[in-house]
Image (cartoon, rainbow, N blue to C red; front, side, top):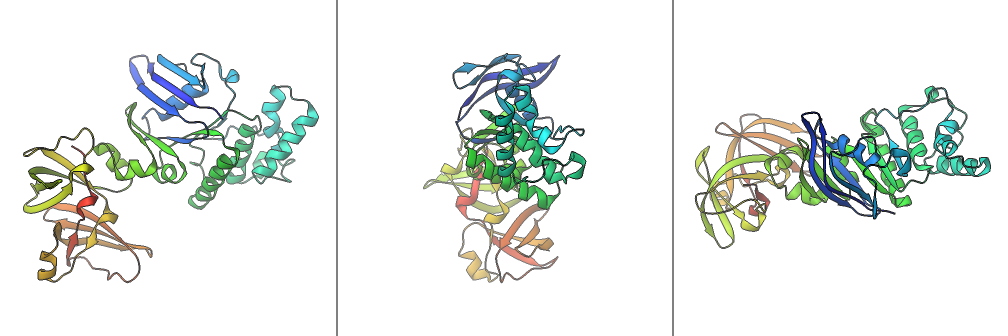
Length: 365
């Protein structure tokens, strides 16, 4: 196992900045994901690690070795491309063995290594098949086997599941994670799919516009986003603009322009590091839909709760495992999600009262 370090790495294409000032340390054996929308710089960063691009500035280290300008064939990385890049004129066995043949591995050892990796990715008995005789999921496993058979120090995956249907994506996602944990290989994964990143990663680097927005565990990224972009890109979030009207007992009291009479209390320690909470400050708060609970419809009971919000149901969706609401408080939308059995599904036009726990309000500044 080996660690990967990027020290203030940047890449410029003419006058266009691809990525700027990336500083990360990926631990040995870690599953680390680059996550962001199209054009954010995640694939450019992966290609610099692979050696297909050289940085315009900064250094890339594998362990203690500076590989910044080392060609790809000298880096001992295995890569799975988005389109798999399999050779259609070769059999499954020949595709998997290609990297070993380039390295001039003796034939008995080559056969042993290929058969071992075929078993690991559940492709026993497929060695003589042509690529066009395989399903999309099987082709993906061939590409993965070809990357792993050379026993790389680092596994690089560039959106490897994007060509698969939803069910197969989930199955293959679990398979990749199983292999990574079994082999203990340092893995760098690129995706724009938030659910994929959350389910597979030890840590995630969220990117936008070539700049790192946040690095953290899936739990940190989801529950403690550092800015509006991360809060809105990772899952669903209600983003409200408010003003701090009081600070008391470790809590901030907020007023909102869309409902001047509404007051919400949030815990001060739920503020992002860049957020300065002081009386009169304008702040954005993030509230996850699943953190919201339905309050009593009885006025006296609802009044006994702090942080209650009343609105009118615009859309209700019953999905089986949850009920999703879009509620309007005046002209302002609120998304709420209730999980569990026994919740009475409210219909369009009904009034509903919500309770927003103060620990679920996160200040973004």
